[in-house]
Length: 96
Image (spheres, helix red, strand yellow):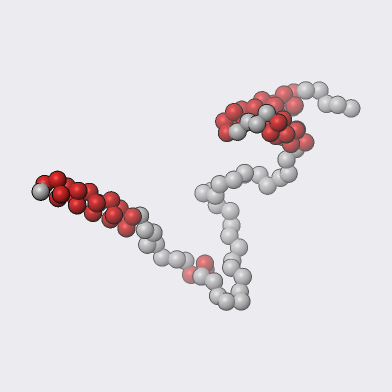
């Protein structure tokens, strides 16, 4: 009997947990869309992920990415390879 009560208690806790994860914060008035009207443009925030710069990649960065692709590198190994590659490209003498 105590085992049944323990199972029911665990199930109740497991099923109730998603209810606490709900976001109940109110929606700001300027984000509610009206039909026929475009939503307001969002300003970039510090919380957004992605590159900080919106500039195009340099030729060195593109070449290093191509080399990493050729070596089938992913994750931390790719990041380390590209970093070393770009540093080497910066310190190499410029081709004339």
